[in-house]
Amino acid sequence: MTFLRVFLLSLAANVLAAPKPPAVTFLYSANVTSGAPTIIGSTPLGNRVVIPIISGEFSGPKLSGKIFSGTIWSLTSPTGINTADAIYVMQTTDGATIMVTEKAHIPNIDIFFETASPKYGWLNNVTAFASETPTNGVASINVFAIGSTL
Image 1 (cartoon, rainbow, N blue to C red):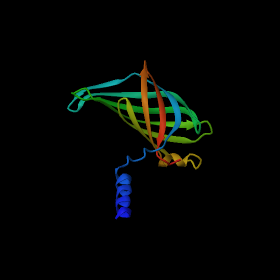
Image 2: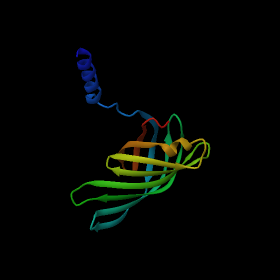
Image 3: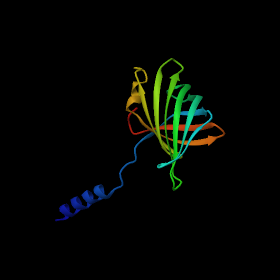
Image 4: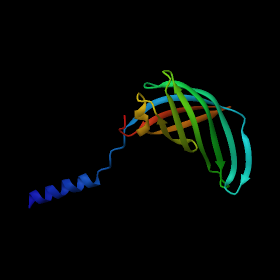
């Protein structure tokens, strides 16, 4: 009977224990320069603005390089919630191109990568998270991989 009680208590402790959070790995910091916005205006979904990405740079322990053209589609809902989607291209210092897709609920950003580069192919399996600090046309972003995909 004692064995059964101990077994059930240990089983309950395992079930009730908080799950382990996923690993978080720093990928890079980026500064992204945007251009003049095109204001679409008040649509049924909210206030829409389209912003070109002009240039930028990124640097981290596993990759660094320049950011090239892209676009940000920003939407502020009638209740004041600000979301944004962005797609842009990064080129590493060794010449690989990486497409970046961002889905943001400002200031939090989910990031997904796509590349044909064998060296950076590991990025195709990474889900990343970033937090952005925008200032006068330049956004500073710190990007972290979530989970054990590296």
